[in-house]
Image (cartoon, rainbow, N blue to C red; front, side):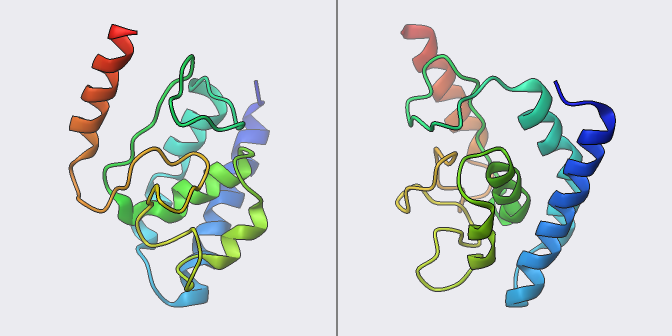
Length: 137
């Protein structure tokens, strides 16, 4: 488990990533992302059991479903810094043909993304469905 200083450094880097992503394209929602930096860091560095060798079915892993997709900059940063895809890809945020759009989608094949989160509020219903499916396994 990372130590407190390592987690603080991780959060600082995530915040830098958020600001760089949004500033570069002059588009996005930095406030929500910045406000969730500690939360996402805690989930992906301390709480969740997952493999960065991404498997869409998530068997044997904790699953995360993002409902408010407009905070994608924090999600992308933490996924990249957790080994799901190269950190350099953060430089493509919201560019044409990038996998890192304003709301995460699954059709781009981005590791770590299990649902598209364009419709705000859908995360809870999807998570309940996934929990039911896991219970049946």
